[in-house]
Image 1 (cartoon, helix red, strand yellow):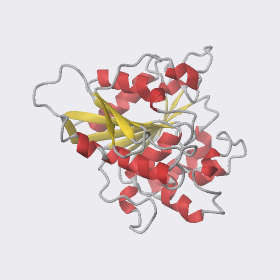
Image 2: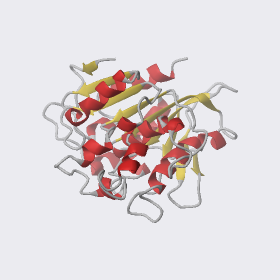
Image 3: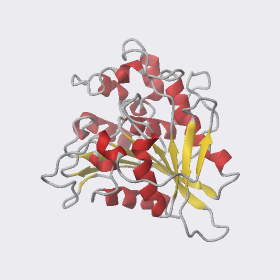
Length: 292
């Protein structure tokens, strides 16, 4: 699917762009359950369930993976507002935490293994909660966009690789919000918006660790085999659309279904607020991916 620029859907033409501190202050409801998928304090997911579901009905699920340069810039509190809003739309939400590069066990390969196992842990949660594992979509912001795109491609990983996890949970589709679909391109970006954290999580540059980039950069795992929606803010200076436009062309050439949406007036963090008009763009795309 082609690039779409949405007229009339913006963060506000003259409004100041949001910062991470603004997002974590947005309201959220407590999760129904805090479910570990490992022994570390950062290996868990917050499950939220909508009210008013029909008895016996299984709930479609939106798995959410936050960004933060694979480091300390964000955690599940950053995505709690979004998870809350999407739960009120009628979906169960699964807000994944993971070990990041500044934490013990994070970096290579722990951060990537956590992102994989955190999503796959929905299988265990479904033994207790009414979750429809046949209708799971994943949403990731910034570094989380890289992680969820890569999650969708894990079936093709070599079994002897450091980031291989068997039997990945199938996804209906993935939505990357200001995400990083090409780790090599991001590493080559002279602006360095992550201050080297994107290099640290890989354990080196593409020249120093070429095989690692081949394993986890979505651009090098194509075709992903699932529909992809790439949402960009027109004013995003962290992960601008122009830096990754080649990814879309490459993904389509490989046979993937890819839609790219640019939201006018929105910055990197504006798209993560459920209180701004661009939220409707995300909801529309999730509904499309999770339709029966």
